[in-house]
Image (cartoon, rainbow, N blue to C red; front, top):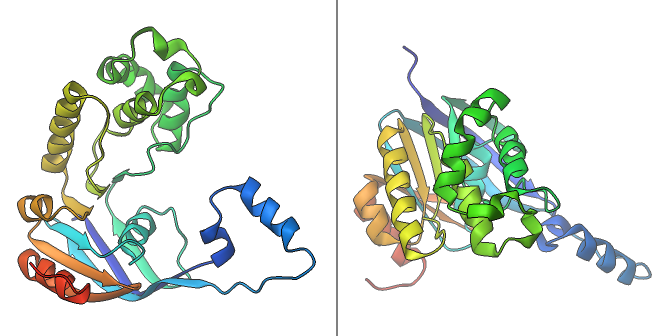
Length: 251
């Protein structure tokens, strides 16, 4: 049986800074019109700089770094969401990622219809989605609202449905960007139990988090990022110590 692994060799990734700064197409176009007379010069952001690492089957890895250091970018690169600018990346195993929960919802479609849309976006087959639909609806606990358009949902309701869909099936490689809050206290208990189950079933876990307690309890290896560079790769307690030193913090 082929073992699961993640391997990066001298991986570089650049963002176009204009796209990085703008949160929406509307704001991007508005600012483009404002700067029509005086053209602004934008330089690329070097988000990942010559990253080389290998994660083997059985490993539980924590990613540390301040916001913008590169840890979330690395997760999305491993997931295949961001194309690299240079280097090589190999991923062996089925990847399941839990971030960007709002991605893939169609506002004018119902919650029930969006189960299909988001499931397809996650790479699930229509047959599998049909088999899981009632389980997803029950877990999200939206009642009659499941047949209302998503645009009528509160933010919490959207997160609950997205969480239920995204965690309906596990994977060999589990990528987590923080532990996501997903609603009221009762739902949070269900969400925590489901994440725990997914972690236990996964062959590889990569968790980006600022929660040292979660990192200590779930991970044995820590990787520290600073300004797009990998500055430490080793035992998790040492990684936390390095992170604090790099960011001028005291334990």
